[in-house]
Length: 226
Image (cartoon, helix red, strand yellow):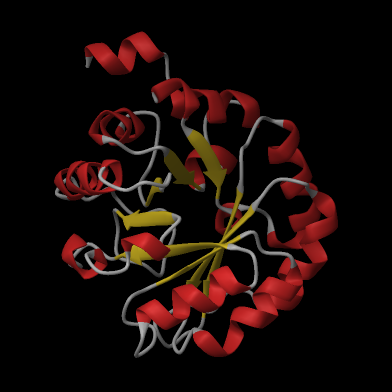
């Protein structure tokens, strides 16, 4: 599992004046997905981008667009983000009245459906929708801002979710977002994460983009021994 961990650079930390170039750059540097943080200034304090930006970025990469909707209500914009070129759409359980219906709507468009869990959100919210879930996103910071410090208590949640995923008959990506860097990534992978979102660690790390991405995956032996 470790050597196959997916890296999804968050363009929230990219240069917004050169988003197309930065998306092409992380694609060439070995990223597996492109993480797009959509914030509405309501569900979270920050406002970021909408479907038109996703559509404009789509020609710049063939990688899956991993679109995280931090908006409420989410249902009204699912079609717009699907039409813009999203491959995965992730919503929060409290971003609408009917999570199951929302996941169905995403899958009906032929996309993978994800659920994001805030630090205080229990994995139990997924008990009766796991058959509709293709990805679980564990927020290891409170959503709304980049560059925050990793919340260690989320490691136990990742482990619990890994056990839940292994009980399903279909593959579920277990992704972690927030404060992920070459140090915390090892803990996340050891706990059971199969995908990591990183913004600052990729775009503002000490090395080149490819070196920063490789550092997040880490040597298999180092992670196993930690």
